[in-house]
Length: 189
Image 1: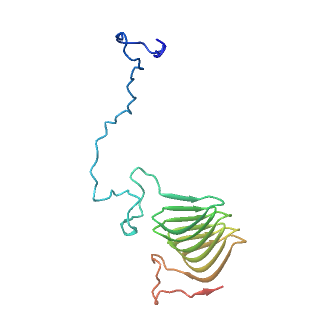
Image 2: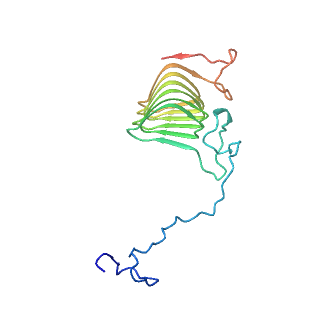
Image 3: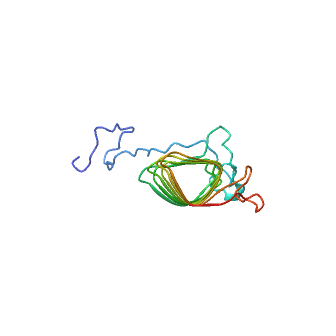
């Protein structure tokens, strides 16, 4: 039997007839486990919490489980483009964007925002450059620098904080536009 080979580690299940060619037994391949999840049909209507919704479909409300939609741009990160429906934007890095449907903006000391936004409240410890409309309270910390076209409901500037540009207070309840008969005097700094 010099022309045949038998693997001593593989047990033989049937005896071989004399003179038959020796082949290694065939072992079944391992099959991947099958999932019990049925195939789903494509839903033509996207769910309410889908991230692929159009900006016009977005609302400024929290998710049902109480989570806020927050975006944090870390130190050393640069982000540019358009940001939609973010309840709170925290910036430690650099953002160049149009920000819409956002409630709170917080710019850390190392942060920079260039662009435009209309929001409820803002706290600036870093730099803001562009068009800023804050319907409620704008807080400029001692290290904060705000420049551009600024509209606000209330403003607080800590000692050392700076603001420059076309600055205007809004009447309570204004949503970004101030009517000519209610417009307070503009301040040009």
